Length: 66
Image 1: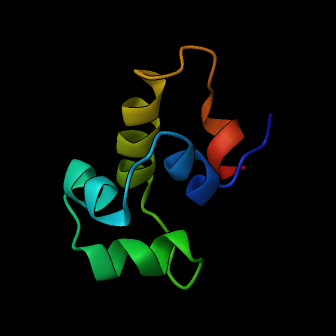
Image 2 (image 1 turned 135 degrees about the horizontal axis):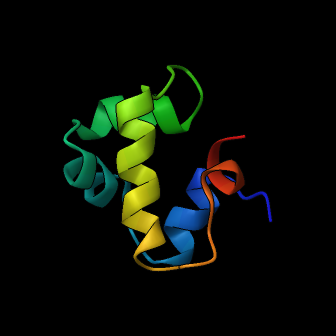
């Protein structure tokens, strides 16, 4: 069930600003990371996974990042 983070975000009708706020980043920095220009830290990846896991219990971290 591999899914791009941007696709997952839009599936739940979330903006980059929503995601940035949820994990404690600025929107421009989040956009760079989502776009692949910078890498998410392990802590940020965990926060994103936890955020989406609450919405989809079947989701696993590999679906988003690997």
